[in-house]
Amino acid sequence: NGIGLAEELARPCVASAQGFHATSPTLIRAGAGAGKSWLTLQVLSALCSSELSGAGYLPLLIPVQRLAHIIRQQKGALVTSNRAPETLIEWFINAENGAGTRRKMLLDAFRSRRLILLLDGVDEAADLKDEIQLVIRSTLLRQQHRFLVTSRPEGVRYAMYQDPFTVLNLMAYSEEQQRKVLEQQLS
Image 1: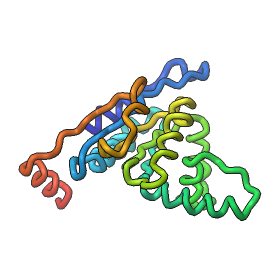
Image 2 (image 1 turned 45 degrees about the horizontal axis):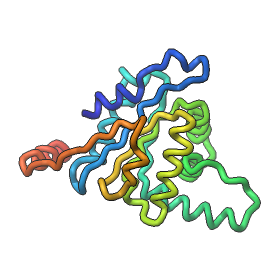
Image 3 (image 1 turned 135 degrees about the horizontal axis):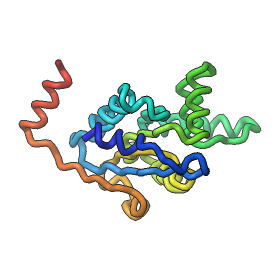
Image 4 (image 1 turned 90 degrees about the horizontal axis):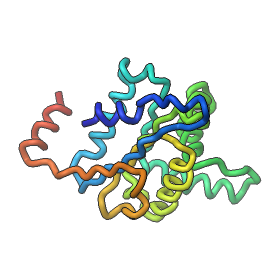
């Protein structure tokens, strides 16, 4: 459930003072309409709850479709400027948060590995899917960030999500479960 995933993502690491940041990267795979985005919102809500917010981490939901749009815009801007590119996550934070205090707080949390990233819908990045998966593997994993990724099974290269990932395969909702979720969302 979302609360359990949030607790795992926010679990304190006693070795962080020595520069080691224990992570529990998680891939959630399921077909269309199986509840990946809903589960991601539950995780986000739990991470924002008073019980977990004291762990010192900030959650950031990144709809990958939006990230892909920002990447396309930034790549065009980089061609016409001499600006050094930041990470794709920093591009997202900068594009979505202007120049204010929130942006500075999120960038600081990202750079100090106190940002829990919820990347929803890697399969929705179309032509940038491989580039985003490479960033997940080569940047987020290597730099010991805490994150969760969702995708349809056919949308990711499963071999990239082996060790140390926890891979959760969601089963499709039954019609009764779909009805209950819709009622919950509408109330």
